[in-house]
Amino acid sequence: MKRIIFFLIGIVLTVNLFSQDTLTKNYWTDGTACNIAKHRWELGLFTASRVGITSKLELSAHPLMFLIMPQVKIKVGWGEYSGFRLATEHGLFYPTQFMRLVATKGTGGLISPEFTIPQMFAFSNRVLVSYRPFFRALLTVHAGIAFAVKFGPLDRRTTIDLPVIYPRLAVFYNEPEFDAGIDFRGKFIPRFGWLFNVENFVVAGTEQNYFLENKGVLVYTSKKESLRIEAGYKLCFGRYPSDPQWHLLPVVDLVFGIGR
Image (cartoon, rainbow, N blue to C red; front, side, top):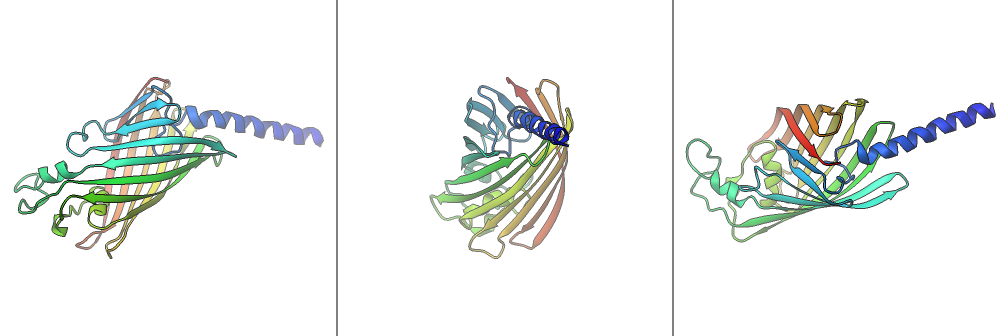
């Protein structure tokens, strides 16, 4: 009986050690408390790209959107404690140029050109905690807060009532904005896995204060982790200034990895 008990303990320890290795090496770092490896690049087609500055510091931005709607984030890893990995994320968001570009009549016009869009920035801070609930899986919870700085009045009639866009601009009309969510990812087999996350946004000072985004995708990762392919859905709910709305959107993304 004792031999059986020791045998089972050995299996558990072996699995735990192996999953500790996969925690940092076999999962892409976006949305988790794990940091990208030093000098590794992850270049997203539709999502933000990131680079490892050090083993505990990474920088992310969207190359294509940077010229019209820059958003830069820095993630700082604080280590692992009793199996829980901790990180903080700090961001700067500048939407003025984008909103001025779409303040026009005709095709591409989302805001009436009669309104003036002031210079404005949003600062965000988020805490992320990741944990392995079982073999080949990683669960992350996060919570954060964002504040806006405006150099002039912003008319409330300039809101862009579209999924994904509105929750990220709502902080400029009512602040602060709080966010909280979970990210659950793992692998069925070495190259194929899943990602499921839920993100909630709550804006202070208004009845149109709640927004939800749920993303579910299947994931393929190449053998050398140089390519990641995602395909699935994004379900959005929001209390927009006009009325509450649901949206179901397709999700497809390619992420190229450079370096190990």
